[in-house]
Image (cartoon, rainbow, N blue to C red; front, side, top):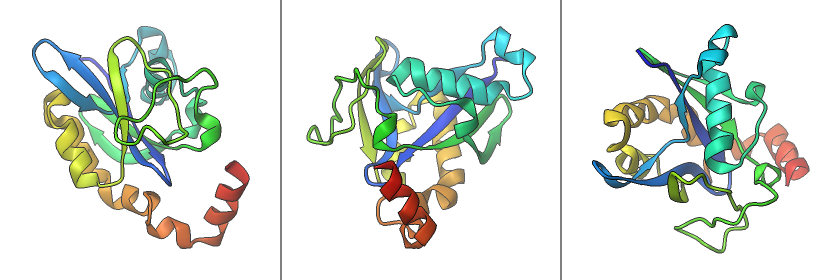
Amino acid sequence: MKQRGFVFAVHPTHGLLLLRASKKKKGVHFQLPGGHVDADELAFDDPHRRAAARELCEETGIALAHDRLADAGVDQQDRKYFLAMLTRRDAPADGCDRDLADPSRPFLLKLSHEHTGFEFVADLEKAAAMIRQHSGGHNSVALAAAAARLRPLLPGGDWWRDERAQDWWRDER
């Protein structure tokens, strides 16, 4: 059974990051950043987290240390899900790919050859519908399970009411 790690990458003013891909069988569809655990990652006590961080970097150019990925509280057999809070500093310096939904957003990515675009989505129900076609629907189920934890982190969420969060965001921007 292949082990996989996925990332709910959230930017507090843009939303949840989804990647667009085009495959022969599925056609154009959206997916979460993430993928398989490599054999060398199995030697560590957190192989799914390391795989998720590696895949995020390979697919988007966003290079986060694996310890910046928090457990999202959702596991499904061979899949584990993590949360990454993004700031503008996380956008790759050599990024040239723009958000499909809002090309004016200043957050650029450096997409891998397997991806044809990306969108930040603030509506989790919409995001779940967008990714349903990928991974046999497993990631959409995981997103629904993590929604209560993710919703406060999205634009307009309760996270913004916390003074510490506001201070952190001011420092990160």
